[in-house]
Image: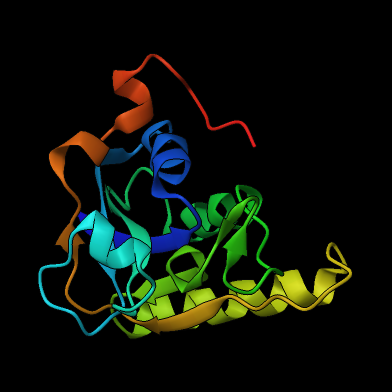
Length: 156
């Protein structure tokens, strides 16, 4: 098994999208990329922790490639908006790939370059690519939030 970590706005919809992928064995939402230890949702929402709402994806690379996860990441959010996704504004909603090792870093950078050069977006892709730091799991009520409510995706 391998782990991938992504930030693409509100983590509820991002988690739901990755949970549908064959080869993904589990997901959990949380906070990473900041300097504040053991943050709560309220801490992160303050915008003063440096953390992004993130999804940690555990997957079987024999079934689904990291590159396929990257493709989905690009599909489910707007990587051209800085510190914003839809109505959610703040650095906690930034577009970010937290890589786990050199291979993921190289794949993420190549994927971002390919997207930028594709002309799909009129604006520049602003997604950060940075080493993963401590992943702090979000409170239980955030885990599989949409699934618990019988909803398949967020509506913006």
